Image (cartoon, each protein chain N blue to C red):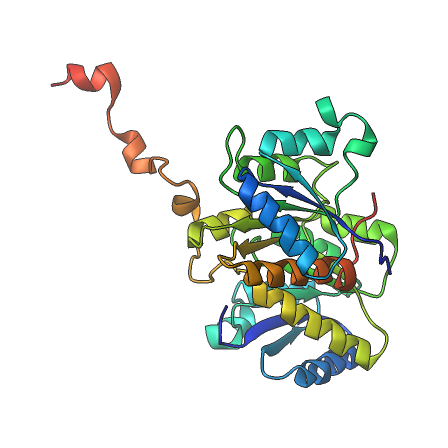
Length: 147
Length: 177
């Protein structure tokens, strides 16, 4: 079992939400490392090591992607579609983290190949709980595809 | 988060393993209801309400499918590919539960669209721990609602329906007035 800290790549356009996630992950007691990108285009640049992410040290391979749905330039749905159609990227688990609770958004995320869909918590303690559970699931319970 | 028990649908050909899973889930309390099928073909019959699963009461919609890899008739890989190619079934999360720790099995499962891959524990306590962890995880995850059986119109958002698309539009429609 691999107990190295995981690298979680968060795609989220709101800087406040990014900071909150970093704090919540630290608070959850896991030592996973959070990398952040601001939209779907930057997410793909990171995963494909393009532009500023060309040096591998700038873009360590993520164990999973946490994906916001509403982002400028390229939104979560488009990025998810591209990732799951790309043989080099599709095995990276994608967990959608969205404020939307609409059944249509949930179903279309699963249909596009999301590994899970989580309603974005509204309070900080809930976010801590969600990120702690998420870390435990992908680090301890599940075997990830090696890269 | 739902208060109804989550239905775990386990596809497993070994009767001992099925019995062990039943006992292990019992240890986790009332959060889960376990349903079992013996191979990939029976799994598809269950999900498509065919044969002995024609009655919905006999085949409640699963929260998650736990999939063994090595089964007779139709193995885990085949049924995983088939489910993910089927619009009506692809949204059901599939977690592979396999004794194999071979890298190629893990990679292939994710490539075929598995939501997760769990190494099958070889002790009862290990299995209880896996189910308990799975319960924690599923409690924070939002599932696709089973009552939406055909999502095409909803997932396409405001895309015109086929009827709307057939309405005359553009210069030609204007000229008819």
